[in-house]
Amino acid sequence: MYTLDPKKVPQPDETLDSYIRRLRKDAQISQQHLATMAGIHLQSVGKLERGKTTKLNQKTKTGLARALSIPTEYLEAICSGQPIAEIENYKFCPQCWTPGTEPDSAWTLYRAKYCLLCGSKLRNHCTSCGETLTSFKHKFCPHCGTSYQEKPKKRK
Ligand SMILES: [Zn+2]
Ligand SMILES: [Zn+2]
Image (cartoon, rainbow, N blue to C red; front, side, top):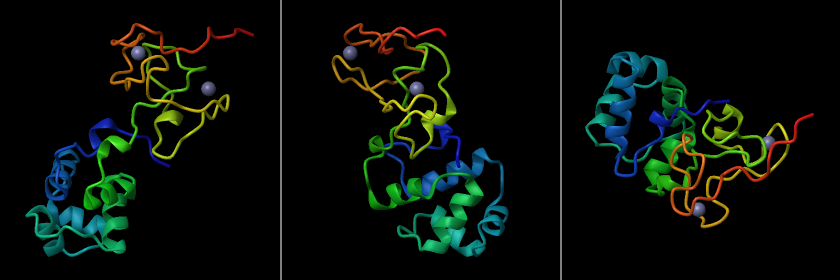
């Protein structure tokens, strides 16, 4: 299970080499260290970061994902050129989330589709106009002013 760190999500214009390099630098580890952690050759890391590798084999992918604490799906997405926008990182439960506060990490998990607390379907957009949520600091949709919270929270 991963707690999604927004900084670890591949950026829309990022390539595999710059992505790996960025995560490695963020983690403050050397190429040698990354290679050891991922169980791959130092040359492979070097080639990757020079943009010589565009496809990862399964071993490299799982090794790198483990070493960099990212889901392998990120690496798959960036290799296949899949739009990263499809990776929904700003997901929330319309019932449990209090807009303007930090979300429960259970919602931002890569594969989470439903709220673990109440079973509601998670969403990442405004119900009224469909604009995607861009910050958990927003309480209302910046486009149409609709509250992100579906119903007032029921207190027991
Ligand atoms: Zn919920
Ligand atoms: Zn809206």
